[in-house]
Length: 148
Image (cartoon, rainbow, N blue to C red):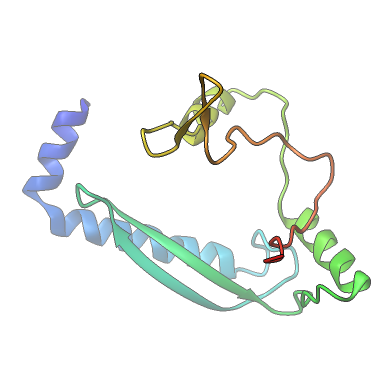
């Protein structure tokens, strides 16, 4: 189905589209809350969810999740930092090994430079955000620079 046809169908029946979006979110929360869900023994105890609509009305959510027994981060405690890194590594992974979906996913996530992110350095155009970021060999929790 073409993009134009999809847009036309959405314009004709936005209520059904929003109801379907809500149904998908309900299914997502059920998966995330399940004992055999993706959090591997960390129970989802609460969440803060903000639903936003993009320019053309497509809904998406931003969520902050609270997990039971998740480690507390204390920047002054090396043990706390190490526990948090272990927690992150247990729940989040990355791989550079190609899969059948990888090229499509990489293209979906790739940064698209716009006029707002370009800066000129010695007659060369660079991204002022420093993108692309190169992967780190191990997980690190980075702190903001001090004001000094």
